[in-house]
Amino acid sequence: MLSQGWKVTVVDSFDPYYDPAIKRANVAPNLDNSNYRLVEADIQDPNLPNLLKDHYDVIVHLAARAGVRPSIKDPVAYSDTNVKGTQNLLEFARDRGITQFVFASSSSVYGINPNVPWHEDDKVLQPISPYASTKVSGELLGHVYSHLYGIRFIALRFFTVFGPRQRPDLAINKFARLITQGEPITMFGDGSTRRDYTFVGDIVQGILGAVAYDKSMFEVINLGNCRTISLSQMIASIEQVFGQKATIEQLPEQPGDVPQTFADISRAQSLLGYHPETSFEEGLEAFKKWMFARMQTAQK
Image 1: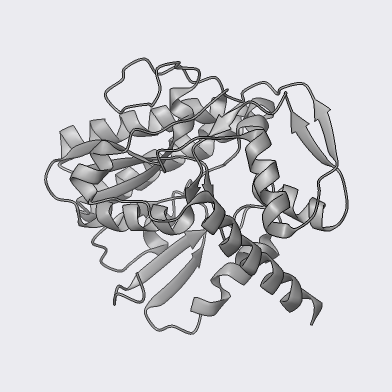
Image 2: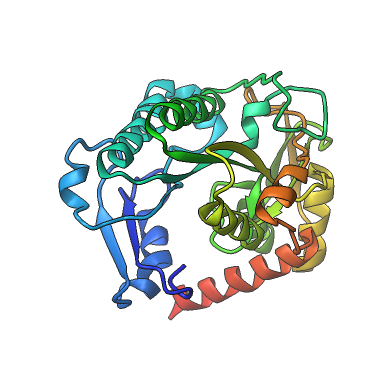
């Protein structure tokens, strides 16, 4: 967005869910840009309006407590951030007259729905984790505020985003680091679970499409790659791209993990002009390049 001439204000609490130094390294290249402003705050903070005095055309709400398994251990904290925090931002939008609101939802809202590929009109949502339920709640809050206050609310259901800067606790990042270090990786289940891996660059194009969207006041839209890859295939692809074999420790499947995710992206194609261009293998190559560059920087 900065490259397109936008003025961007970022709100981030630098939560310690993973090392805040990683997050600060991600934003560091933008700090000298006069069109970029970083506000260190929590989206639950009732004082947020006093910290954000500028005029804003659109809110892109990507902040959340992430992760299915941790949400089972601390569901109240997840509800506070993901539901109350979302409502706080919607109230901010209402008070400031901001009429475009893009919300990062998740494929996890579909849960154990067996009808794949998943389509947004499928009403059989079967979330199986507190995290997933908070994303359903966020979508419903958006519908309320859209109906009552004229805020255009676009909920984007992200499907397993990967690529440069992926969170260190997610499988591709974690597995790649362990494999290159010669350490074992943990595979939950028999390797048959499947995910619709979506490259971060394609997700960004979908977000920009949602920022520009003006045809209706409320939409829920899948952003995926429309291709599923098994856990075993994913590990084999990492082995091939990084040129090293994995030592695998197999454990039982974890509570909250869904057996598959698979996006029908026809709505995103129609409404946002969304066309994912990066294959899984190309995305892994881009991730590898970023990972090694980051390791070299850390060693200097």
